[in-house]
Length: 451
Image (cartoon, rainbow, N blue to C red; front, top):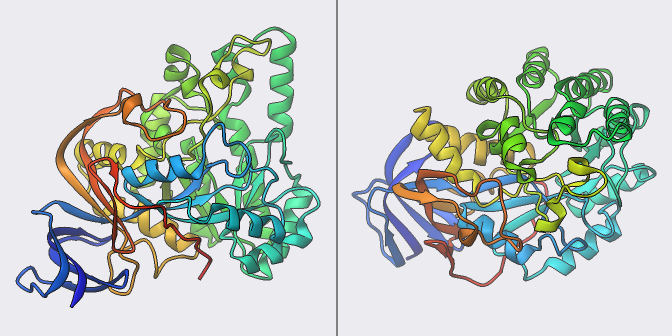
């Protein structure tokens, strides 16, 4: 007898949408069956032709624990993720205190988070000054990737210069490690920001002008050159501009080991949102033009951009204030979005752009699982995989409000968005963790390590 049978599901894979029954045993997908086959199960969920998607894999989140927990913590953020159809997150190493820069810190974070997460999770390790010799140790602990900043990341973290990045890529090759890059050129941005602030030009428009597309383009060119030189692997984080995506496409055609992600906010929002509506829309790299956003979508459609993630980067409302001496430059730069990504992608891609739901299964589920070494457990509705599912009601209308958010700080640029197509049930390893926006199960998420 099976533990769970999900009946009459429109099962979404990367290739197709097919009506099936799905059977689960011991937290694993045991069988995918014709709807005519109805085996015995301890529990049966008839989802009446709603869509059954793989649980989302958000490869880029800042859940801030341990450390900056006034902004976010795993209990709140993992609940929000589950409500939004995300069953696995990969948490960044900065905005942790201390940053996850060696095996001992990795282990302490692992112990601290036990019993705090509704969903499963993995860790990025840090790439900072002086920790090159610690990378192999973090890999042995299970780090899924390693994060590097090419611009000033602020307190408790350090950027790397190109000579350091070259050494890191060579070191990571020894254990097939993946480096992820925040690509904005340090010198270009620092020079422009310093000049703006010195001149008292601290408006939203000034912030945008101080972080132009050419800073992102220059940094990506440099990374691709180093990948070419070293034979290493690179993941380009939060691509904001189509010219960057074009460089990634050229690199892939050349055969370089390069992957890329973007975020829903770069597809939905524009620089006018920041200028007109305020710093809830401030992020880095910043939002670009409406034309840029539309062109960026085509690189999602053709597969150049592999993943859609949230870069969930929360803050308290007062940290978003711009009335200090540095104006917009002093406001926290980050957008909270882990709860909103799947429903907004569905509305944008399936409803408005009329693409197959299979694109969601690829860009939000399978591709990030593959890139970060957890595919064959996560990322697909296939026999032998973890029974991580999302039931999505394509007819459900929704509006994102502050009250609907499960974040510790209930603020987001996504508030006010409306659409149709909503996750209504979320399963993690066959366990119903969320139904109709309410958490149904205790926090029993597990740490994932690279396959």
